[in-house]
Length: 345
Image 1 (tube, helix red, strand yellow):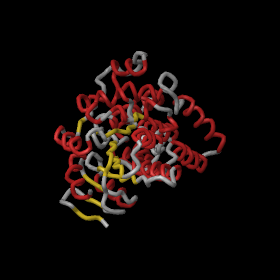
Image 2: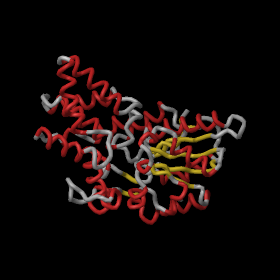
Image 3: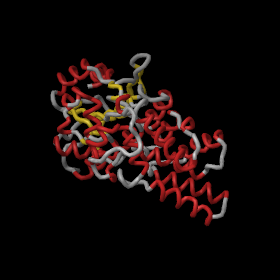
Image 4: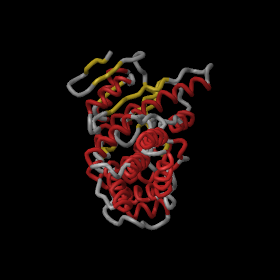
């Protein structure tokens, strides 16, 4: 059961008191508030694609609420995936009025699952086939998917390219991909990132864990270093994993990132992972299961999941999701962590 620590922080003592040996952070929604960066990149990407293809302005339909619903499915940690899913839904039902399109997006998100894009395409196909003939559906959807060419790399897919141009801006986009921007030349949305973790929190964590700290994030290393600035090295980037730089198949909730860090540091006891989404929680559970299956005769690995909800656009809903999925610890801010650790370990 949950024990309330104060008006804003909760803790679940799920298995036992913890003795944390290592701490690993997600970045987005934990160390950094991304509502005005990644969320805006999704909205602007959808706006650009829909306006250029069908000359219709639908940016206002893509709200933080809808983005959160996709993230809570467990299959949309990658925000370019979310941009594609929303664009596909809007373009394949472009004959609807705006109010019905908003309802459609919520409906699509509610029917999505851990398979991400596959679940969305499957549900959209079901909707289209129920309304028009299958042959018409195939012609329409094939044209849209061919235009979007997703998932595809920057240069190949308009979704990937436009999203990263908005997010990185011209200079970082050039540094990241060695090609010049083609579609967007304004302010980089990455500059809207807001660092949440304070110097005082980092100091307390380093006093306790020394260099036994790392990060596993869907970002690239370039984006993480830019956003975290002088805090980047303090969070031990050498042992960290940046999934945008890895093969796409390793994206969350694949446990690859956590397993790579844990195998590298060779610590097999209690490891704390702090995330802000259902994907993070699923990844932690899968990583723990895999590690213990592969090493049945060694010390059991416990990955304690700490869900952080303060950067969410709907904190109550995220708290409920974490409780439903049996997160070990639930707190508002990463800066509450030193206080919470003193209570549980």
